[in-house]
Length: 508
Image 1 (cartoon, helix red, strand yellow):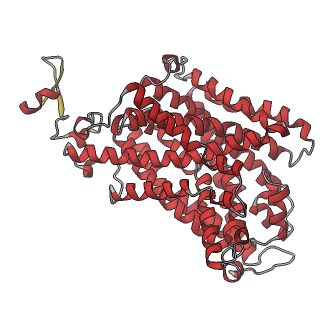
Image 2 (cartoon, helix red, strand yellow):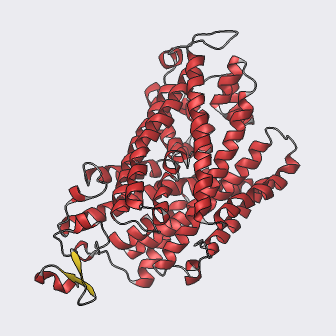
Image 3 (spheres, rainbow, N blue to C red):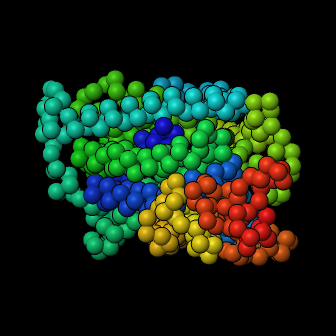
């Protein structure tokens, strides 16, 4: 359930309206579909590595093990920034969405105090309760989205009284793309740029989907449960994101005055959601309040998961001696509370949204979080390429793996190139119509931070790229290790594990 709906938050419920105005109905649908396919392939790369050797650190430890310890450190720093900055972003979004009902902005600080401690409390308790809470939130989001997709279909075929207006494929036929993107004169170029802008928006909506890999270290029977979870990713992409974007594009015009006005004045609340615009067009009055309430729970769920991911990231870095050892200390319930307290400190940054003078700083923090997702996906694919090289060099048969991704390593290379292009070109809008220095730095500030972390750790520790023949693959499933140098059997007389074959005694 966490894999299916755990990270669905404001990106889909609210950001989809912005995607519609950027690319048009067809452009938005294609943007989410293309990004979803590449994200799905990336998740299969992560799934194969996770099912082979589940660990608490997820792909952070994979970078340290399969590529270079300096890369593992850079991945950890990037993920700390990604999750840490996402926490205040989601919390402030909750406070803003509450203003949909309470228009007094002076109450926002009080709402922030209330919602700040909810995800912290959920993560201080035993991890079982974290799972129960996420399961409940995921069920709520799935039921709501299925209901909204069905409602959108009814609206499209004219089943809502009193107008009973049949829309059909009107918007897909008459205005499929954005022909006026940033006042670009060339129609073909305008359509392509609008589609490309949707790719970046879609990447933000899919953000944190990779955090499911961190749960494997504390899941029961992680190889089988992660196998089912990863396989559910494509159902999520097709059944949730693609159908939602399809219904939005069929029922709401990209030129709708309600949508354009909401993007300007109601951004951050349910008023900016295309599902709410759909309700307003048909005269349904109760549903917008329900959507706003569900979006609030979605943002709370996302903050809850981000605190969890942040605390486990510190554990992973402390295990490889990149962070102080006190991050390894846990409560009696096994909770690394030092990392959770760091999540509390990051969450306090949400109070920046209360001050108008700090709005620019908060925008930068949000951009830092969003762009870090793309970097995390690139790192996952790089880790897989290193893992595949080690598997091939040591003669393991991937057909015996619990989960095996397709067409490798070509898919991993394709995902790396695609995500890199989206990351490098995400700031093209800062040059249109004139160059904006502030937006440019906000679009690319993540890159130098991670690059400096990688270079500094490499110079200080003098790390080297990992030799694929020296990678330790001994913690894989027994069926995958049979007949390899890691094929060990317990010798009761010796009281230890010994290798089956004489030529493998050096690995004893």
